[in-house]
Length: 514
Image (cartoon, rainbow, N blue to C red; front, side, top):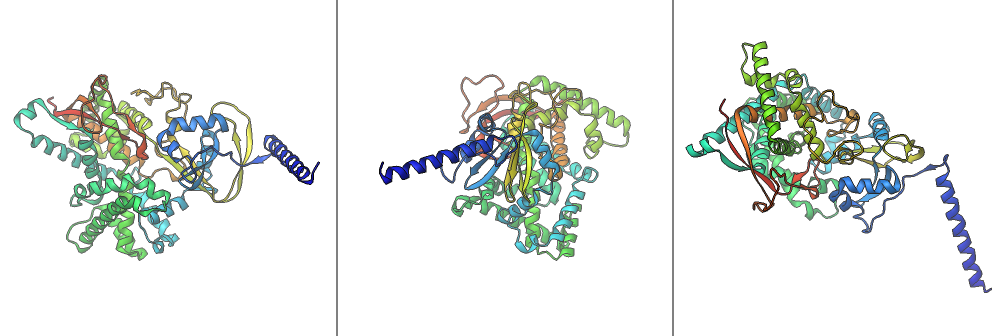
């Protein structure tokens, strides 16, 4: 045997031995391992396209091979996907080792344009978010819901007022995407910033920013790819800043929420630019997902006529009960009574949750703050063996909700709309429904968002008739041979926490006669 052959043989034996050792080490029940890697073909891009285009099915496919926790690369960023309900619950509770704060801070700077000076003020950050949680708490935002609902009512009334006599009689056709998101956005923005805020003017810029938010968040090394999003963001911030100047000059009276934020800015010594950037981030959080959640809520409701009749009956009963309990109030006053909204609309509450289950595509993200070993089950459902797995400081954890919301092992008939799925007394496994995230960093505006969605549906079913007409494609052309009451498919490529439609629904709107 030549020296070359001998060296080759030695190397082969060493590699074989190393492979056997690693395999035994990783299969030993006492071994501490790192999450396995998901296969990807394209360097740097990694599994970004798989996750974006097939968020529910891709995660399940990888889980079947690697288990419920695995590593991946998404646009150059190493991430760990966690699909285990048990582990997700532990991560949400352990906010010291798994924190959202670094993620939020980074997004506020890179995506929303808040300066590092403001972000480095840790006490100021705590004070700011404490005030935000207080103002947006369920006990405090009743008046804001009243303002938002009044704005919605006025906008729908104006639409009817601008109709011709024939349109008032027969109804007028609308594409839902051109009706619901702009109206819902404007009502929410003016409920937060006041009636003089130019919400209609900035809707397009906000949409440009929202469309590219995901790419901006990933930190692409190609700024020109997100130029439209940056331009839209900067325009929105400029309009917020101009509105703040009006309030500070006394030209316009500031709403309560804005006055609290202005007072806080002076206390903390922040610039008006930083406050405007912060407030734009709050406005974005309040509206970017809810406007599409509102769209899908209307779609699912009015593609099920039997549900519409039941909601109308529920609204009529609740209104009668409210006026009986509060004889000095008007029907519109119930919108500010959050306890009444929660207790008297069980079907509407269920439909809102079911719509969110179907259309949500959010990912809860956490950063590992210190090396930690956790027991990871071998599968996400039912009893299973567990393995000790190491999560290193700096790891980024992704916990996608669509994996759970569309998983047939967690929801019976998971891909279908079931109006009563979340009604009281329905049997369902708890913990799988997380449209607003979870833990200490659960969305602070979730109760406000739910109240807004209820207000929209109460207004529509109480005062208007909405009739499904047809399904159209993304070019606005009627879809031939579409099934009756068909809904548009999801645009899985939108990458948003609430998916956009690919196409639209055309409805006929007119006032409801009682």
